[in-house]
Amino acid sequence: MALLAGTWTAEIIWSLSAGPRRFGELRVDLAPVTAKTLTARLRDMQQKGLVTRHERDTSPPSIEYELTRLGARLLPAIHAIAQVGNELKFGGEPAG
Image (cartoon, rainbow, N blue to C red):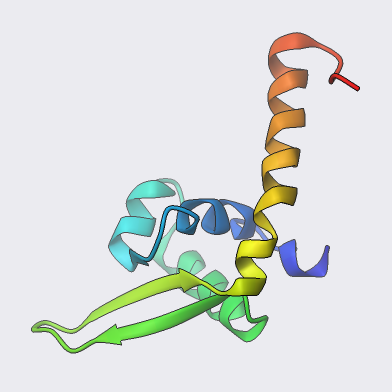
């Protein structure tokens, strides 16, 4: 659970599940997040080994973030949490 701690962590992992994303793309995906918060969260996630940061040698330089194997292993848990949330929101008690 410590790996998922922090505001926006699960949402960032979910967004990166579709593949590498640039910082600006993540800002669009997570519209209410501020640049300062997203930067801090991405740095924290890098330190925890959940995401990698790739600098692309382009003009201007481009930075992409991508899930690591550890980050990808958290996707089933995040998906399960989202599913329960949707069941509770739209249908009352979760199945099972």
